[in-house]
Image 1: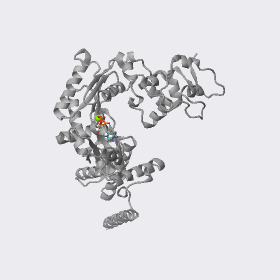
Image 2: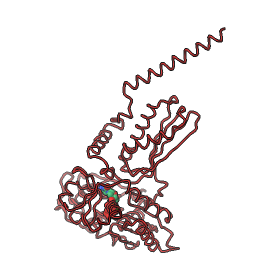
Image 3: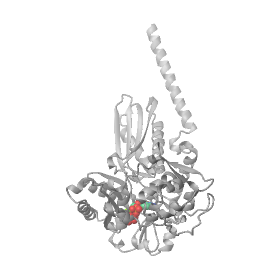
Image 4: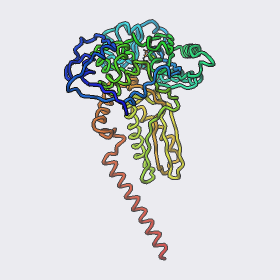
Length: 479
Ligand code: DCP
Ligand code: MG
């Protein structure tokens, strides 16, 4: 018989400090709860409670730590944008530096530790940062330059690492599993870090542990400019005293939810039964519980295998209609950029493909500074298309692809653009999120009524010309 574990919802809520299904937390905000096993056993039956049923299979993915014999290295550049600015201008060393949108409506992208000591943090409105630290050096930023340094670091890693993943502009994971037998992983990691610092001039911190979550947290704890190794048996003692905020998937909202339940340390979080968190927060709760317990089986995905996003269009009739082809490029690229922003990704490479009516296919690609913005990608796509379409022959298909994707939000580009443009993007995306992708499109990607009738007229006159040519030929046959 299949065994199943039943958890009463009211039991869960009560254990977490809620008096009833509708009541708010009964514990004062910020108090750290302790869930001893005895507390759990003491919970008695509760009438009229809703039941959530878990089967043993729900927990099958929870592999004990001892089964994981991986060695995963996480590398994260320190105050990345600020450090690049410092490499280029050493007068910034030791001073509070804040990088972000130049207007008050912009937000902080990166700030130095000196600025952080004034309470400034990334994603904070620039206006607030200015008020907190008026003596800071404010820099608008240069995404092209940061992309160049980001690639420099990736190239060094690619040259030395067996398998690496580029997770964001300044973060990489390397799977060193199996290397221990030949070299010490820690020694190899130390040498790699040294090489990066020597060749780029950028400070970087590393964490080495049994999986991605723990090594990322370890790198965070090693900052600034440090190294931290957490061996398998050290994972729980290392995680236990840390704030739940250190768990990568805990954002502001989840953090406040958990804090309102009195949970502040990873230890408190991990001793709560998984099914309780699952019952309260669904699949997300289960994931958080696993991470709090140092469990993470996600693989390091090789950078070359990381997904790209692409779209293509085959025309009903092969065409040389420049206006229409250009409009198609605009709307396809717009679609991809929206998808990037929706997935919170940035692209660093753009590819355009055309297929002529004789099936001859040509592709051109171009590296771009990390972006998820239509206007950057569209102008690149248009210029690639112009270079590609040399033969001016009938086109059967066009395609656009973005690749070299990393995690990141469009805020990365904010300092390049006016706040008006950014809020326009956000409004457009909100409309698309609510009413569908086609709810709003840029004019260049949509034909105006005048353009459409002009095109119809052109087609009609082509047909008429063809008809009279045919009649001419038929007349010739008759005589
Ligand atoms: N970034 C951004 N907006 C954010 C977060 C980050 O524009 N909300 C950019 C600027 C950062 C870079 O991405 O320099 C890397 O992000 P990190 O979170 O790694 O932050 P830093 O490298 O600046 O600091 P740390 O030393 O904490 O890693
Ligand atoms: Mg960083």
